[in-house]
Amino acid sequence: MPRVILHLDLDAFFCSVEEIYSPQLRRKPFAVGGKPDERGVVASCSYAARAFGIHSAMPMARAVRLCRELIIVPVRHGVYRQHSAQAMEKLRALTPLMEQISIDEAFLDLSDVAAEAPRLALDLQRSIRSELNLPSSVGIASNKLTAKIATEIGKKSSKKKNEPPFGFVVVPSGEEAAFLAPLPADMLWGVGPKTNARLAELGIHTIGDIAQWNQQDLIRLFGENGRDLWEHANGIDRRPVQVESETKSISQEITFTADVADQKELEKTLREQAREVARQLRQSDLAAKTVKVKIRWTNFVTITRQITLPTSTDSEDEIFRAAVKLMNSVRKPNQAVRLLGVGASGLGKPIRQLGLWDAGSERSRNLQKALDKLHEKYGEDVVRKG
Image 1: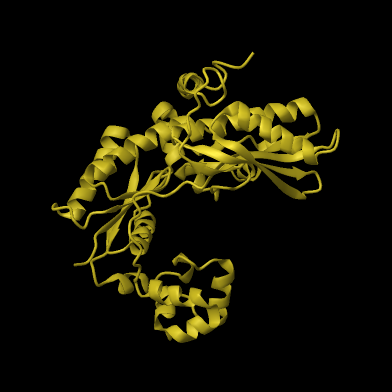
Image 2: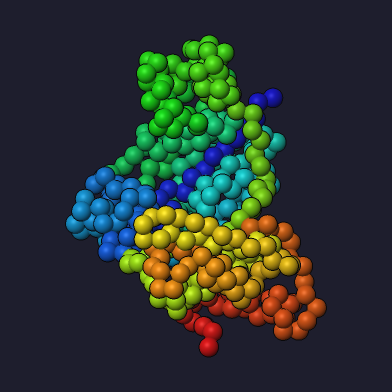
């Protein structure tokens, strides 16, 4: 029996959440992201802003040049995570076979669900809209690749002026290749700019063009990627929905608005990054064995250094001390820094300490959890170290 895979994408997610708290933003050009005079970038933008050519990852300074009346809203990751969790809970209520691939995107395997998939999906989409005030687009197919592309096509075909599209596309089993055939080749997974340029040189412009080529010729031209290209172009994707994906690392980094040479300012930044990395570790019930720092100098040379700890940790203080030690080992006095980051890897379940107040002890972790809740609810400035 063919599988039934649902792909759901929460449209313009950050912006949709901001509109819940500030309804006056609806149908207006606005972007969530950093300030234009501080090397900020667009994290998400409204559909009204997209009409001006603005898109995610664009420098905010350029976005403002494209749209002078653009409203800039600062990023609130904690708020977005809360709304994402509410939406994902609705998906999990349908089936435990859910793979969340980002804060606003997930796959469901509905193969064993008795109800009719399109009706179930439409009810889900309406429920997320009516109860959570979040727009979404849905694609349904027999595999993940086709379902995701169906979502993208639904977005484009249902596009409305200054409003989310609420796309909904179902690709019947057996019609995957026919559905994909007329689409541009670069809509296919594995076709980046370089591969697309090479395909164009060969006279290949659509997914259907790829499907018509001999598989062995594609393998000869593109290596093993050629095999995937041929299978994907023919609507073949055997990957299962992964219920759990292992987190391999957690990191935070910042590009400064102006190069920083002050030691205290750099340590303050490392402290804030260590705090966020430690908080994410605790939220995932993980601890890290390795701490890494990433530094970019003013000449754009970027280096990384890492250290392995005696025991795994989810403690802000331990991560901070290791990060400062690493930075000081490579940075000369008064040397300016353009970018600074802290990361944690070698992740596993935390090992509890027996001491009462040692970093990483159970009592210390309970204190940190309480602080996490306060920061999540009231912001980073509600409680700070003395």
